[in-house]
Length: 140
Image 1 (cartoon, rainbow, N blue to C red):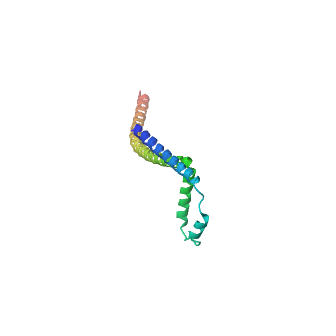
Image 2 (image 1 turned 90 degrees about the vertical axis):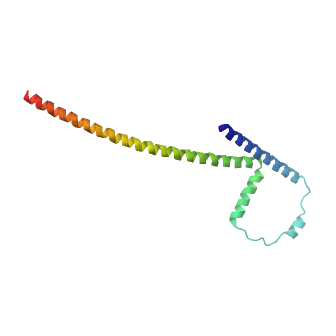
Image 3 (image 1 turned 135 degrees about the vertical axis):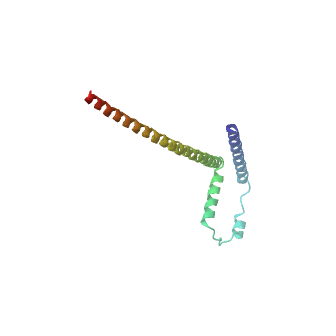
């Protein structure tokens, strides 16, 4: 099972790295192309952009920042998913261990009650034996 997880992680990492390389090559080819026609773009763009929600622009900004980073951005994304996955597994394991601890603690409490009752009985018997011995010592 561990080998499959490692193999899956290796394949996923390889695909992300390959995707980053492809994006980087695409960026290199784009950089070597002709400069854009700024006059044409200036005429076609709307001078009054439509208002968009700040959440969409923030998400777009984050995505563009990660894509601009290339290989480092791919590593960040991989580490995020790996951390999320292992943290989720750790939380599940921790919950199972806590449930086992509660179960064992309850059993131990029950056993301790039984031991305490036995010790009290033994203490009473010892006290009775002492009193009986003292009474026999006075008579004899």
